[in-house]
Image (cartoon, rainbow, N blue to C red; front, side, top):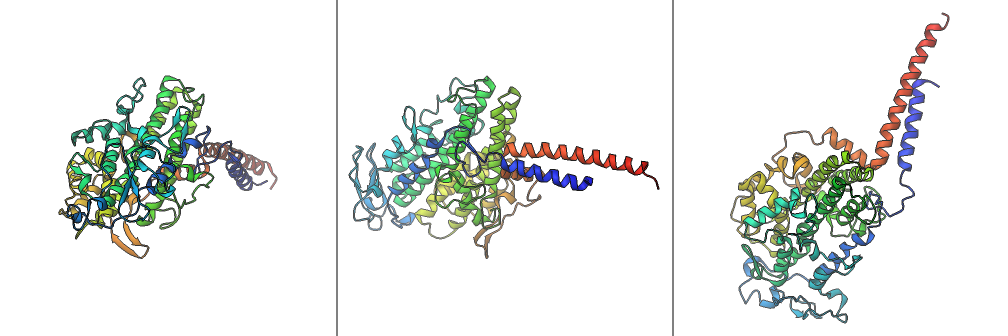
Length: 496
């Protein structure tokens, strides 16, 4: 066989071998990630989010300046009940008024109007050994979570940035994520924002998005940190006797149960978690795999990084701990990209005129997720964003505020993640594929680095398959060189 033909055949075998890995998976894939432990129950936290959103009722359609005027925005029309430990849900009439639960579980009311506060507080779908997992539990106890670990929850590179910023704004240093949601439910003041004056629709957006952006996101970060802590202490059986348990849990909380059995690159249609957010935002910015369609490029990159980290966790050597920490910092940083896109989208929508409560509420949620990291890079950019999102003062210049935010991209995140977010990763804002609304002003480098291209390949094949492919290609290359050398010898020894 000719050397070139032999190499091509060998390469084909390599591809087939790579794609064969993981076909007989023990556990269902999360949109391209194969967990090695059973984290299906963890992933069902997205069903809690769905139930909570379903119980928040319909929008009132009010504008921010309507609330406070009793004629335009009656108390019940704009607010949930403010009594402690209660949650209002819509009346049977389905209008803007509420009937109120006293906190006791009511299994007789309309399932479409479930007690959202109770589900947030106590959970409903995600079962764990000690009972029911709740989103409120993610942030409560944050001051002491993992206190005996080498890096406690509060000392994580990302969480410590968030803690420092929200403390500077007068919020509890550790439980700010929990407290924001509770204030939105209760219609009370937190820091500079009084949820009692924002209207019901604003509060709905704050609740259903803030639960993910300010509570689930930090917990995904923590699960990766938990895995790294185990690696450093060489206690890799601490998580249910499985060396990758905490890492798998991070993916489960990022992707959610609605991605189970979805193939790599497949776009999910209905979910609430962070993976879905990437796919939802990418058509607005032409950052999907196929421009305006397909899965988000950022999801491809994050999946590749999760797969790489899983293999490091699986090997479990002390030499793998620092590289795993770098990957955790890269993942945590890349997860900020959809938050930035959402912030830009709603900065644009609130740039002038009368702000409707829904749009302002969405800006609040997205901006709140990135404010601590923006402040680390450029306090002036954070102040301008805070003025709009928290002070509800939209008098600033949209173009100037947007440019300030764009200037922070290259330094956002933590550790090894800094520099991963580029203007090309965020893209330009479109209304639809034909209408450019707002172009980015920060382009200065190629859209994708060689490293990011490698990451995309690793995502498609999975980390194990990628490593195997590289190894087999190396063998093929050696085989090719040997056969070429042998052919040269034969040519020299052959009679003319």
